[in-house]
Length: 284
Image 1 (cartoon, rainbow, N blue to C red):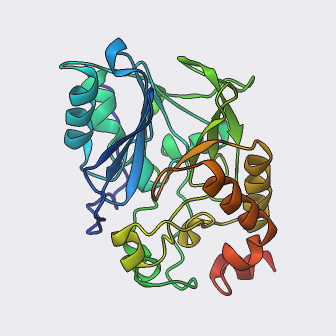
Image 2 (image 1 turned 135 degrees about the horizontal axis):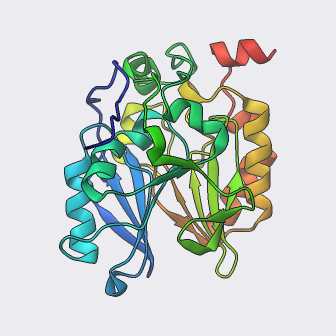
Image 3 (image 1 turned 180 degrees about the vertical axis):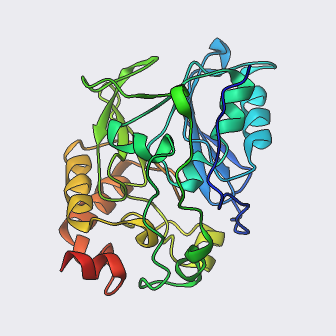
């Protein structure tokens, strides 16, 4: 008997895309980023070893594309050892149930994210009034209700280890969501940032569509704690990553990444924090 897993009643297709949708990029030999509409999923593993771990699960109704891309890279009938969620927003868990059922695989997330993944607590409604362009205004239609993964979702180990990815550690990077995590590999300073910071101005439809490379804080319409977000960015910048894959936008590396992150830390309030919005007003 299949587990009784469910999305929220507001689960739906979101009509937004980018020129990178459907494009996969081998950022490092074992780090593969694949863009689904406007969000990136990451497959961690060497293609010749046929084993991988999936980070995040894209937008609603994208499971078929993700399975096809995994099989293109790792072979027919491949399955990940686990799914790791950076957080539980709709565009990062949009296909998780179909993938869990297809692959019969467990999901891991930070313990503070579990209420949103077990049907117990909804995220705050997105802020469609926040400073920004058309995507901000569209955010009123984005799903925010809790999904229910039942006992298929487990808490990430408290010691910072990542199941089936022994070389990575998870880092708590809240602000965008209470249990947001980023993953870091010390040996080559590779960072999977999630939405702690991103490389596109996610609030503006044209910039999202064109995927203009530009340092940004987390998407404004869903970020509820800007003080925590700033501390999270400072924490990641201090790691001096050599390459970063973010939840939205293009991968970034080398001096470009170093310079952009330094600029974001030094000018976080100007670059990242919106001039107005309901989550800003709550924190004042």
